[in-house]
Image (cartoon, rainbow, N blue to C red; front, side, top):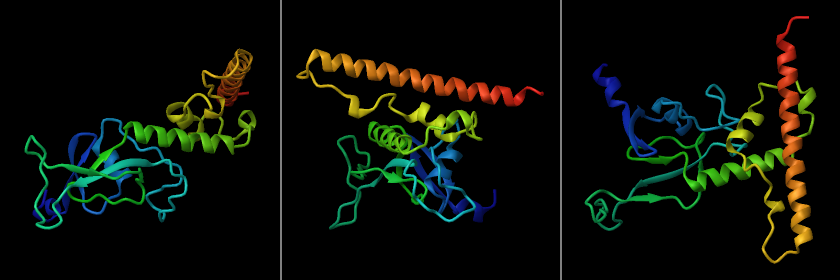
Length: 199
């Protein structure tokens, strides 16, 4: 590698591992470069288009090495390593460019909960025409909902104070919802297989 190309690389930390990436690359592409099957899920991002940031599926947890405001020196923890100041809320990976020393978490509980919420919102507002959809079997919404979805709706949560009959009704609703999801998946798979069989 030429000396100029080496100087354009920066080191960031992705899920606890240091990775060298080109300067100015966004977090989605940086995670792809880290390899080992890592991917930040996304719908609206494409490398050849301008950043929209609408889908909010590419949420990641981001932190930067802490520095003392008065002196500018690194803030160290009890082990002598530099502390990382994590942002209180997740940030979208498509519009966040990698910076030297940046730390990224792609699978933290906060990130998973955020992606679950986004997935649920997209599914609530999505039409129920999966069996006749042209994308059946190759739908990123189906793939990501299986991978990043909760598997239940928070509106169906029951506290211990509610009556037994209410709990039975909610249990029935959960089972019915699971059966409908399974049926949809089977129908989408069946139409996908049927498309592969020559007539």
